[in-house]
Image 1: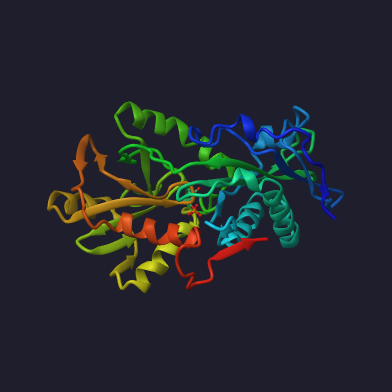
Image 2: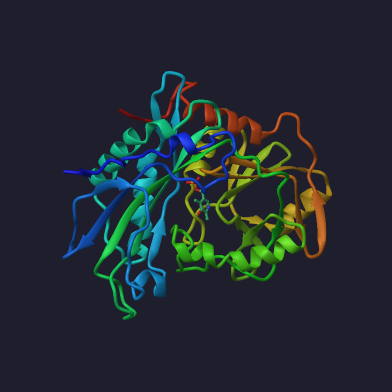
Length: 349
Ligand SMILES: *Cc1c(COP(=O)(O)O)cnc(C)c1O
């Protein structure tokens, strides 16, 4: 059913896998599936390359676009694994629903993804930290600038080899003015516009010496919600705290996996609203031991300091950090080096 057009020349030999910039190099093939006449057509796997769209295509004008981020890992026996891909599949359809994009069929998604990964399996390198980043996305491809939901779409999957990513020391700014998402809005969806709207405030924060923003609730800016592409955790004393998901916060796969592991290892956890005031006070009293982000790209990203109302706070250096603990546990499961108690691994074969 899937039409497979193999690339006549692989880019593998020209790719330096020891010096990869995240998201810059793409594997030899991609998946493309069109929606028209009320149905998803046959998926096609073909050489990675440009696509053609009319300048009037809806996606350029109204941002009708959603995406996902997932990874494929290779173990020591060259077996290929995905981590909870059912979650990404369900989430892209949840995002699509909110953007009035038709649902994508599950068998199309898994069959096409597996064929693509098998074809590009040499792009997945062994070794802790190496992976193939997978970017499924959907765009409204129908021509015509009428401001309404399109009748034609493209579902695509592209893949980019990735190395263990060290972002340097991350300091974050708690947002005092800008917001990422509002009640009743699209914050819970991986909708393209959510990300484009963050670049300007993030650039301003960068000028002040921060790498990222922790978004606060749009109404009062009193509660900490999440980062641009990561959910966020706090360790106050030995207690792990994170905000509950809602229609403003993305329901991260890494976040929910951290919460499951925290329960398994009897780490005292609270899922509740986290106020800026509480975190500033905990930092002042020396009780705020850690902050970290969770997301597919970096798994767990430790945060070393934050800024709020012109003041900068530094966090202590922890020997036995929760960040390290969860990162190690998750990666061992992802790379098939630890028991998969919760059935999170998915083998591509
Ligand atoms: C993708 C994303 C996350 C992390 O989700 P994972 O499923 O863990 O990768 C968190 N917040 C936002 C806004 C995101 O886009």
